[in-house]
Image 1 (tube, rainbow, N blue to C red):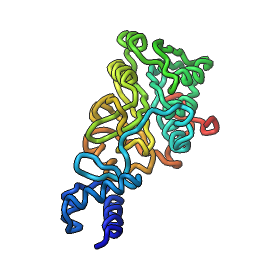
Image 2: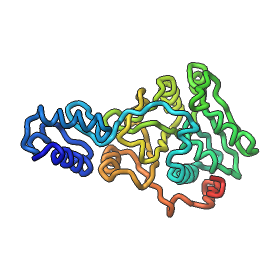
Image 3: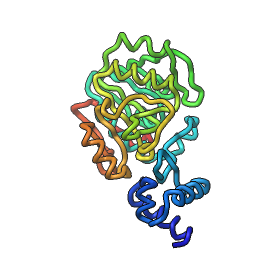
Length: 275
């Protein structure tokens, strides 16, 4: 078997199984582990796979901080669907926390209550959207402003949360890894997110499918610590099953079930025209 043939088989195997160990590849291709490591190094240099702890995976799991403008251009449709579904979970006279990120911003664009709603927000863009709505009492957290996300972090953002008890936290994340948990690229934001979780009865993660199998720099919590994850239909079946096996409610939205219209029991109108 030539080197090119080995490389092709390695990539085909990864497409089918998402990850594979050096020892398994060595057995499968009937070559030494040294040869496999050289093959993986060459494929990694050409950005065709990523090596991690004695195994090969198809994508680089580590993500870097990006600006909110750049993030808003990614997965726009999926974020809109997720945001619409998340809005339907808001109930009459609810008190909620909205963290930061472009997916929760997509949710904020859908919120049109005709009953009183209290929102605690870390995001300036979310506050700008909701602050002018008469039925919403908005509490904007203070703190240090992150220019990349236009959201606040730090001890002055965290401190007021100990005085509040909210029904739900809607949180965006940079990565969801089955082993490492839910993550963000900023450790100050992860501290704030944990404080938000303590102030909420239920934690709801809003994440498009590209966030799975990815890791940000700072861990927020284990997957088992959240109550619900809302994502789009492109989530891999294996990951979806693994999440549900851990007792976390998983909601997969599509064009058919995200456009919920008037939710009379929740007193919320989800308007796709606003997206």
